[in-house]
Amino acid sequence: MPFAPFDWIDEEARRRAAAGLVRTLRPRGAGPQPLDLASNDYLGLTRHPEVTAAAAAAAHRWGAGATGSRLVTGSTALHAELEGGLADFCGFEAALVLSSGYAANLAALTALGGHGSLIVSDAANHASIVDGCRLSRAATAVVPHADPDAVAKALHGHEGRALAVTDSVFSVDGDAAPLPALAAVCRSANAALVVDDAHGLGVLGDGGRGALAAAGLAGGDGVVATLTLSKSLGSQGGAVLGPARVIEHLVNTARTFIFDTGLAPAAVGGALGALGVLRREPERAARAREVAAALYTRLTAAGLTAARPDAAVVSVRAPSADAAVRWAADCRTAGTAVGCFRPPSVPDGVSRLRLTARADLTEEQITAAVTTVAATAPREASG
Image (cartoon, rainbow, N blue to C red; front, top):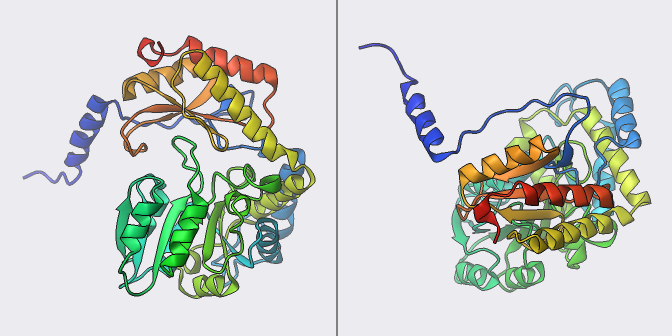
């Protein structure tokens, strides 16, 4: 019998191709790019001169890498400065910086979960939350999307520690979680509330301080936030924010913190630079929301089906996975890059284009983007 342990991969590849779900990498060059409505650079800070200069300065001073885990050699004064800055800006007692937002969610859920605990998770939560629940060894109840009553029912009668976890803004349709109602449910059940504010930081709240600040929940005893530094802050990495005792607990128990190399100094410096720009220019947050509203209004006026955005994500429905791929490709050919979400990335199985509303988009660019998306739409997507 021939030795062929990976022959099964060929069959999986055939199934993906038949379903129109093949994914490919498209490395981009450093030169001129299409109009970008595909990235998560909500505030347009990734190439901001202050942000790139801060990243370069950090690399020159501290080196290209952190050299080790945070508990060995990977913590620098720069990391501590960023943690203090994030906690202060977002309104929390303490913060812990990790190598990615994905790692931050895994850290929070595995450290706060465990045998005998209960995690109640929204059905539309990000994959990193799903994986965190799986790795936590806690019993997990997945409840209908944005349904505080369902969360209350799942928590009812549970003895022992428990928490509810949700995205603040859901990355597929751009809708916001009902955070005040969820917080009330958690308080009544003596459960913690963990909120992934990846798509809220920099866009929601006073000056972009995030969805929890906007809801008046930042800094609460039973509230923990996770963040990414790769969206509004234009850099890379993640963080967990919460009460000091929670952060200390993560330092001692979270495996994605303890056993992972610390975030590279350039990413830390870039995030600090972006935080400084946002403090000085808080109007960027409101502008991102204005651009999202304009995209939604004009796309729906053109006959397309779009989800009303609560932050900076504008989702436009496509008739099929294949149609979504062709539509996104046609947009790129016409000079506008848009995101393309297909199963299994979308929990309801409906494929979409995903447009990012960036604070630095001009009125001319908004018009050009809407014109391109509408002109290239599959016939089934409009009318």
